[in-house]
Image (cartoon, rainbow, N blue to C red; front, side, top):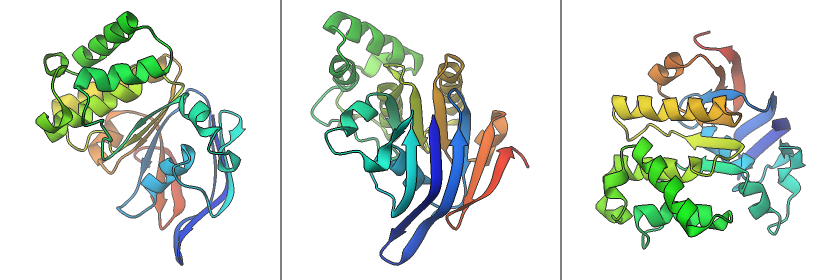
Length: 222
């Protein structure tokens, strides 16, 4: 599903990622961790082509992402669900509209889009907020809407950047249960987090980034 070959990323003269090479199989659940500034968010951005590498290769689902044109990127991103750290919700659309917008973009009819959106919101405890606008929500509620939007159309690859950062322990556990369920159904899941408790709660492959390199690749704890 994901293959990186000698991947480097620099900003001006600052090296963020240095020579990363790895392979993530379809259907894997992978944690990405490391201290702040280790390159976790940049790693994810390279996978959905929000950033381009300085050198090296990025392959996702058999396609070389770093050489894709702007016209090709929407097709790539239709296979992904991305949970952004800063949410990126549409401020002038309600909670329900934020989610059905994605489903309609993927070709679902209005009735089916509303059904799927409502069920996903209910799973995340947000069905009572479906008519609210993002600015009326708490940070944790906005985070859950962003999660619902990313998982609602059951993408083949889910990339999550600190998805539990604004959630309490109970909601964080519910989210991880949802991601595990989606992974069990066949999706590849990559979760960037600095939460050690989260790493210990789910047995999964863990990549530890430090100074732009992979310091550890295996089960957690080491």
